[in-house]
Amino acid sequence: EVQLVESGGGLVQPGRSLKLSCAASGFTFSNYYMAWVRQAPKKGLEWVATISTSGSRTYYPDSVKGRFTISRDNAKSSLYLQMNSLKSEDTATYYCARPHTMGITAFAYWGQGTLVTVSS
Amino acid sequence: DIQMTQSPASLSASLGETVTIECRASEDIYNGLAWYQQKPGKSPQLLIYNANSLHTGVPSRFSGSGSGTQYSLKINSLQSEDVASYFCQQYYDYPFTFGSGTKLEIK
Image 1 (cartoon, rainbow over the protein chains, first blue to last red):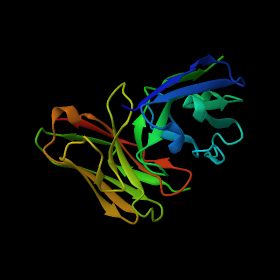
Image 2: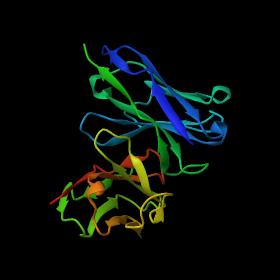
Image 3: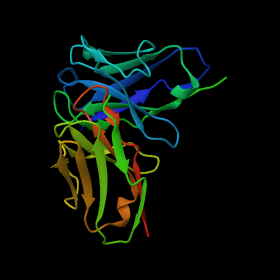
């Protein structure tokens, strides 16, 4: 059974940093692109980052480019999101997500999410 | 960036009815479209991928159709457990983008 478990969320002041983790199990982690998707309170979904199987390619929307870094450790079946220079608009539940199949496709598996609150 | 315009924003229908949610892309996304269901307090769940393929375990009353820039999700024979928010997403090109969502309620 595919499982994705996020951790690392919490309350952080504007301008500070936070690192999220996602522990994956139930599949061969190194075979799949992985992603982070966030959802601000009572709002819609926003894709945040995607990383290739080896980690050599990463993709971000303009809203987080230069501030967030996605990475992975295939030996540990773990995905990470380093978030720097946090802003109030980064307040959201952050989900780790795995595509339906190997390659770039819909997100078939989601974690339970971890809440990040950026506030002074 | 590809913009996804989803309609309606909210929808109220009776049990047993058929409902349709639409998504329009700002350019051709070549069927690189998914539909998700999200119940309150839960993570999103994949319903449809590649515009018209039903994800494993999803009831057959859900179906997706469309091509080019116009896509739709149809729910036949509405059930009480279908109360949720629904989102479309294009994954044809980066940055991936989502529609703004449709909140479905039972009348």
